[in-house]
Every structure is written in C-alpha cells, then in structure tokens.
Length: 364
Picture 1 (cartoon, one colour):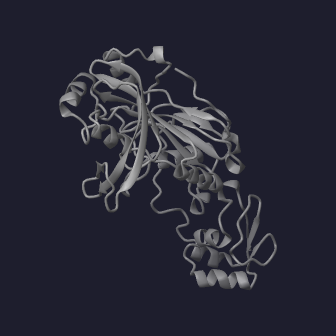
Picture 2 (cartoon, helix red, strand yellow):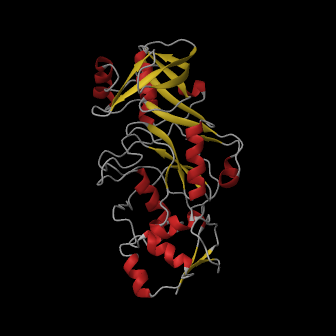
Picture 3 (cartoon, one colour):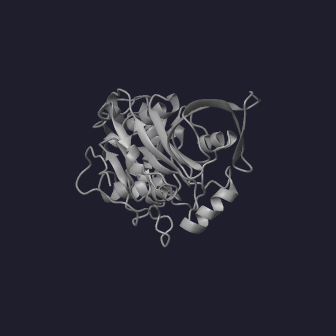
C-alpha cells in the first residue's frame, strides 16, 4: 500500500486526472476499476474520480509495489530540461504566484523540444528552493500564464500551484487586469490615442497583417497608447494592451507609421541598422513594464489591488538617453535584464534569499 498526501501545488485538479498522471502507464479502465473496488481511495473513502482535490487530501493505493512501479515507469516528464545556471530576476513572489522580469532573447515557453525556456528556469528555481520535488512534477508542472515574444522583455506571470495557474490564466484571457508596456518608436508621436483593427496571422511566416475592416478568420484588436517623451525622430510610448494577440503592439504601431525601433520584422531597417551598429541592438525596444490587479480572491488574494512593475532594461535606457530622452524626468527607472552575450539562455538577475515571501523589486 502507498499513501500520498496532496500538496498545495497539486490541489484543484480532478482526482482521475491526478491518477492518470501519477500512474500514467495505466489504462483508464484500470484506474476506474480500482476506484470502484476501493483499491484506490480518497481520504479513506470510495471515490468516483470526479472529486476535486484539496491540499492535505490523502490518497491510498492498495496496490503492490510491482504494480505501482509498472504503471509509474518514467514518472518524471521525459521532456523535462532544467537549467541550474539561471538566476531569475524576481519582481514578486508569494505561496501561489511568481512574477519574473524576463530578458529579451529568452523564450517564455518552448518552441522546440530542445529549447530551455523561462518555464524550465522557473522549475529549476522551485526545485533548488525546495518549493517542489521532482516527483511532484509528474502530476503538476508550474508554468507561465502570459507569453512575451522572445525578443520582448518584461513581466511574465507564473502559477506555482494549479489554482493560481488556472485563475491567473483566466484573468489574462478575460482582460480583468491592466497590462502596460513601454516602447521606443520611430517618429514624433503626439498625445494619446486608442486604435483598433483586425489581425490575421500567417503561421508559415510567423507574421501578422492588419486591416481596418473585418476579414474571415481575423480577430479584432484594440491598443491604447500615450506619449511620455519625444526624442531625436523617436518617441517613448506607454502602451495599454487591451486585447492581447500575437505581435499586436508591434504590428499595430507599424501600421500607423510608428514601428518600434529594433524591430526588423515590422520595422524600418534604415532606422534599425544605425542602432545595431552603435549599441549592438538585436531586438525590438518593447518592454512589459506594469501589471495592475483588480480585487482578487482565493489563490490570488494576495494580489488584490497590487501593482507589479519591472524597470526598463539598461540597453533600452541607454538608447533613450542617446536620443535625448531623460527618463528620470518622467519617473522611469532602469535595471539590467539583458542576457550575457557569452551565456545565451542564461538570464541575469538574482534569486532572492530566504523563503518565498511577498517581494517588490528594489528600484535601481
């Protein structure tokens, strides 16, 4: 007999789904048969498998060790790749959630099986800090709730428990939190504006197109921006992302004649090449700078009314200064979120000392 205690990061999922992960080699028919015969119980009682698990629940498997080993062979995910060299730049962390300042150049999630993304770095951090065990990864894998383009920097939210992951993901989909970006664009932009349109994606080229009129399979998008400062034939904008679609900010601003500097996919090569030559810029100057949370309950209660902020990357700030924009005059701080050139895939920053707690990144 084996007894298992459900941990907080495994709670919130259906019992049969959990069993399917724990005994992943077992046919579903076997699992339901064992439930009917009370060879698998929940809190000492017969279960149907449809129960939602809670932290502290007790699962008992009245099965031989040989049977458990047979059906739980290769319990750890075969595709799990972690990185012990990454030091995450953590903006805020509590029992259920973590917010990370992602550097430009790092994937939010894998694009190919061999990739090591922010998710793998996150798992390494949680393993190293004792917040999860390798065995638990077979039944729940922490993950990010929002994805930034590889070459966009800034805030990525992640759930360390299943309820938080589900609730945070829903919040991003329902647009119930405020999402704000900073970007440096071509040309002088005056005032503020709310713009909309219809976006279509070409998966073969990984590029989107925008139109003012609706087309088949196109989705409506809305973007709001205001000018914070003007520089030498450029403007620093704060963008409120109302909808959140692939390349939305990049394509939308390019469509009105103000592409983001450093963006070769949608931008102006004549403006980008001098920046690449002078500063070594190889990515668009787009940074997820702030998340504003509404009143929250349950696993997200600690986030009620909270504002999570990420300072501007040093290279971004340097280019602003070179264009004649004084960041301190508009209340913007900067801090390094660049990937060291000699260590692609390894992010800079720090792993906070001590146990998880409510943290705010120090302004630098």
